[in-house]
Length: 443
Image (cartoon, rainbow, N blue to C red):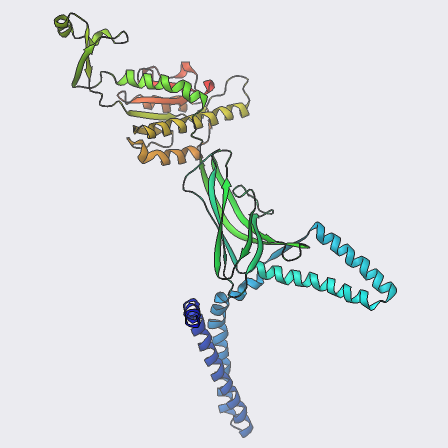
């Protein structure tokens, strides 16, 4: 057991730090010898030798102070003793302080030695509380681990990790939460409690987080606080940990999604039907079939209407377009228009996720982004990330919004699903034959 302890101690030893410490001690020992020799030389009248020895001693001391001492100060755990801690008196603490004042007045009026002893013990308890809680907060580092992909309104499981780097002392009753003085505190909205943290160890606590809206959530700093050991004071240590979390739009299908998806699927099927070049099969005529696909020779031989089916080469190729230019309806408030745009962003995310689930080939476009046409699974998170950041733009007076949609008509062979707030009369005519429009006002 002793050998195991020594082995662990040897592996945990800061060997470079001890080497620098030994060099510093050796240099200071030589400097002291030079100083002693300088004093002896001065008594004998060897002034130049004494001056040289004193200069050597001073030079060695300065070298240690400039090169080794700062390095040791950065490596030593004592740096945690100078951390900044904020104090707040709790309700129990105010009651305790009131009792101290009452006891102090009674002791001064009566001169009773027992009251002075009790008063001293109560004051000592406050001092002990401050020292113990400071030691509990020192030497502790915090980190927060979040999943790679986070969606709005969906719970995610995060992990709060505390590491105690102190060599000998544990920490007690630690609470991790948001810094109340921080400018932004949107990530960790409720505290996480750690009752005990042994020395040279790390503990993790799982916490469920939920983000209400898409976008970027930031937290500049976290706070580690404790009321240990007596609960009279709440000591808080600020831990600067800049954190930025990108939250994708919600992808749970809404009622509007279920209502519009069959129409979109029908439009896609209608657009691609018959656009292949190779004959796939000849089947019986159905009422929904177009007369131009009737195979009259096969119908004559079978004395029943037959239609030709062609291969559907592009059946699962679609371009998803989100028009960011916001055209508010007359009398519509800016808040209502912004809410419509948020619904459109959510709907676009639902559609993109749907095409990802059915392994479609997809391209996503806005006025600032155009992904390559590829499997939806390869670009889905790029699309969702862009949707997390996208913002509505005011409708330009020069018609740039219509110009953006006009450029989409250059590829008539690709079926496009366009989410826009532009009035129907402003949509370029050539887009209607190859596109399905979802107007934001209808969401």
